[in-house]
Picture (cartoon, rainbow, N blue to C red):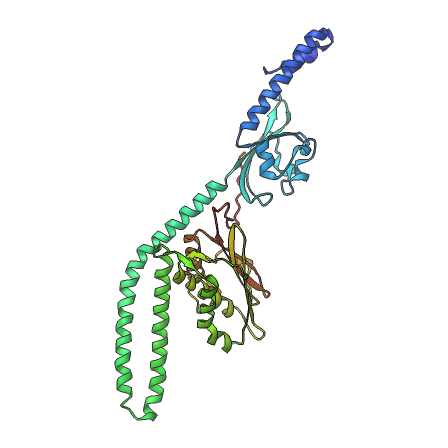
Length: 389
């Protein structure tokens, strides 16, 4: 429609006959229908607002992004989409860009441009148009690329670490064994204090060896050797390995296992390590008496879930954002690699790990493994804001 057409039409409205008026109205309807079809074909969301922030048009993509329907027409966008403060976003004569995260109806990362619709003479505006783009896939690709680059850098470092630290540790262990043989020839009174120091040195060497092994396991590329596995039996076996330590800490373990939990196509050795790490994290987070760990399983047609719930010290909101960073740990003697290893194994099986925690209440860590095609994967919560004048 040509600029100024409506103004000319209004000026002639009292001078045109009914037939011409009907033709003009038909033209308006056709052109409006054409524009609506164009907007509905777009993957980007389009929302047109009047000067007061009331919705005058919204296409299907925008409705899908924000979980809206046709009833939003004539209503305040700010009221229907809490968090979009129209009064602060709408700046006369300026185009504003924002990034935002939407949690309903789907977790998405969006970017929108809010631009004024200027009058033909540029003396004001009719309202505002909002163009909304879905950035979820782009954001996921950027995060995956960043994680891949981080692991590649660690892999290069691992080659040097394995040689420079691994070989001296083996040599130290051999020499400590030789010292132990020499100590056996000393009188018991002279031998006892030296054996105490020797035991301390051995424990420290073992700790360094564990750190090195976990570091290599966390970053070394590995392909799961899948086989049909009785996952519940594997879980019981892992619990037997940790039973002495759990008993010494007085921690009760409750099993809430689904009787119809299916066999899974997983790498049993890798998942035994996953269960071992998660159980150790759980009981190490428990302080004092009445320690409790509950293990629950669930399965439907789409996924299998295994959850580890403890009543430990929990994780603070500040620490939640860096749980999967190497060497980020809440424990004084921890390496910070346990959860990194767990997530790598679970993701290599097409699954995902979910963590919920509340300080001084406890933590729930759930492993989600798909039984069919994976529809979605939740991303870590991050947001960004950009202004463009």
